[in-house]
Image (cartoon, rainbow over all chains, first blue to last red):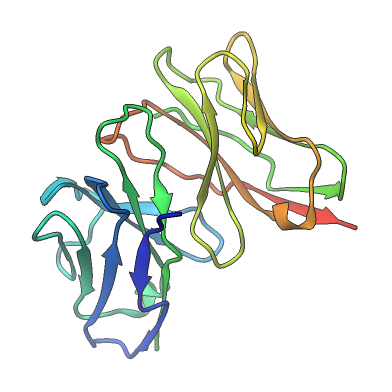
Length: 115
Length: 111
């Protein structure tokens, strides 16, 4: 069964450093999402792509976060500089574009710890 | 998207049915009820969704009240592997529609 791949699974960094997370969605899925999940809370959408275009980045802290999906396939989420409050699980999800009621398929996540 | 209310936690004995309630009293006519679950340290997993009719798949059943203001997710024979946080989400379907997660219900299945 096809899965969403994410790397790394775990990342520890010091504040003010730069970090990057990578996501490879299920083949053929046009829509890609990045969520952030703080411990004890549900995931919160950061950014949504339709192919290579950003559909929704209203919750993305643009002063320090950036996301790209240059060829409309895999995607990178970057934080620079990292702050203590960025410690969280970063989840990537993908969804096919054709089916109107398509569910989202989530990857295993990257757990970020900022020291 | 309409807001949902779920109990923070529930317990269920293994082999018994787990009934997880969700209130969504402000749901609109074109909004669906979706259920996802998240096993510890994993990404959320889609379970089921429905509009107004009861739905069943290999994982669970979804019962939606006639007025659509509440629903119940039923795991007919809970196992230890069903221990997870269960999220009830109301949304208009379509790939442009994001999932808005609450805090969910933490289901603990015990021996």
